[in-house]
Image (cartoon, rainbow, N blue to C red; front, side, top):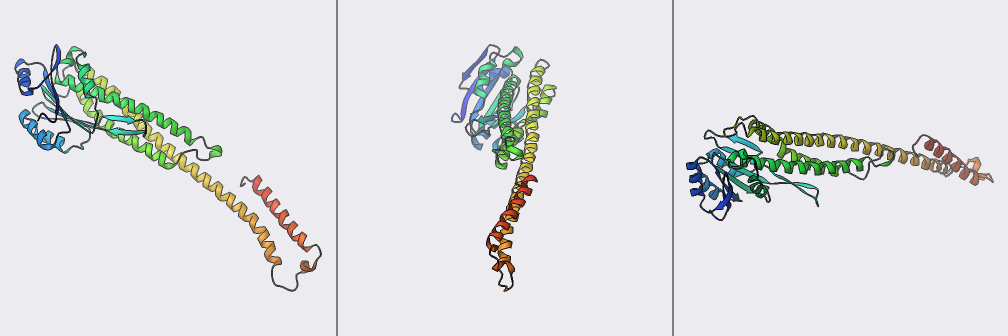
Length: 331
């Protein structure tokens, strides 16, 4: 078990310390009626997770979700006053302008927190340091730890939303820099790429709104009246971020429609130019074709000025057509 347990910490009114014997620490918290044990697991396999679940008497349905992974963000409540919390922490990768999703599963009981991390860095380490400095209601309770994790994850959501907003502004500027209604330095793939990243962020943010709202309303066992304002603050940040990300999706749909309209206008303009040049090319072809026919009686063939006349006629008609197309905006 020690191979996948990243660490075990015990929290009390005076702060926290790391321990090796989590069973003994948990018994002490249960007997004393205060404090909690935080067990951190890093990429555990199903058997290792099942063993810990058996020792902590975790709900089988919660364990099943944690073992299989890939769950959408949620907070599930069970009859023993325990919670299963599934989060999708986000990170913005600057070099690739992409959103990277992690997976964080938490079991929360009256005197324990088990965090199961998959997919790389999560903000758990910073939460453990800030929890000691948190106000009294948050410092020595498992629900306080849950609040700290939610707050850190939502703060990362805000950072990712800021970065996506910058990408959206840049994309919008590029779309509208084309001259004369022509599409700018962007193609549909760029728009779809950003839309995919925004959708990835929204899938992590939107499902959390209602579960966090239930925590803020005090509908979950263990959320005392003193804790509710802290969850309400997290909910406020979460809802504002969800609104922003949803707005990004709508804006990207509008930008895509504008881009497609620009492409259509550009294609129509190109078609008109091609048609105009084809019409002008038809004139000398037609005149040359007439005088190239194998008839004996073509008066101009024996005329001394027939050759310059034919060339001049081609030039004059082409100039007239060019002027007409230019005035109509086809060229």
